[in-house]
Length: 449
Image (cartoon, rainbow, N blue to C red):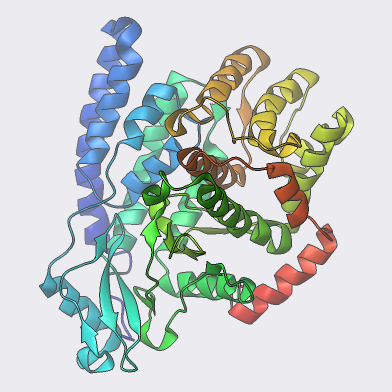
């Protein structure tokens, strides 16, 4: 590993990035003001397109953050969410000269001798880095993830520019205070830059699913990994969408595996795989095994928050309003009134809906994946305009994001299952203090404490 880090939050990189991002958003801001004055009923849609165009010229953290916001239906106006969801994360990969420099900087000038083979062309490229196929000295197939240059500078610069974007959203609709969400996204983006942390996330999930034959997690190769380079086992598989025409039993099996891969770590360790992108799941054979990929965005929750998730589930089933209020207060909602509890329950009954219904069903009958949660989000927005603004606790951004992404995957599959029975199975033996003990011990073992 290189001793010095010439890319670490370089001032020149931050200034350059700030200027380029600021110019794009400045143009969007000018157009935004004109639309508010003269735009009429279509102003919101035109403003959304302006911001999308400004962000779409960039690759990196700000675009990634914008996509995060777009997957939380209760955060953005529908026209903004629609435009931001269309932003493309598949940036053109960096060339071989970058690859050689990055590999030499991380593993030394003799880096090629540490692999049996290394493909020059990237197998995949996204907003923060790219992946190359390689072979270990033992012949094992490997995936090598390289972080793009100056990402630390880009993140710090782009997080500053997010204040401008949030200002636009708040002026459009002040019903939700996004300040806590902004802090949450900032922390998670910074974590995603630390590939050493991602390797430890991967090790945590691999240990958790060690006894499962039908859920696989790549093995990280720590000797060939650094803060900006992650080498791991390559797992072969096909994407989820290639099974859309598979028999119902196959699609149901895929949905069961996804449900277990998401909920079991949540209820047993207080962690979730927070990036619902369909590319983060592949399936081996005829969907006999789920390959769970990309552990940059893993959210570790306080045990009390997870306890609140379970408490609200049980309170909604029982119709216990006092217990519902206690769960919201435990999560950090302030100034709750009866009216605000009613509004929050609209969203809660949507998120928990499939778990409250003890029968075989789809996640949402008659709803397309792209519209999942939109109707309920609109009802919540309208109600908050009358009942008062609300500050969303920071933990909700990735809880909501992952839940919405998972639900959309189930809709793509047309899965029909008894979701309540699956959730109850994940809760067997659940107790908040026991979860806290398991979480502390597990995080200590994998170096995340």
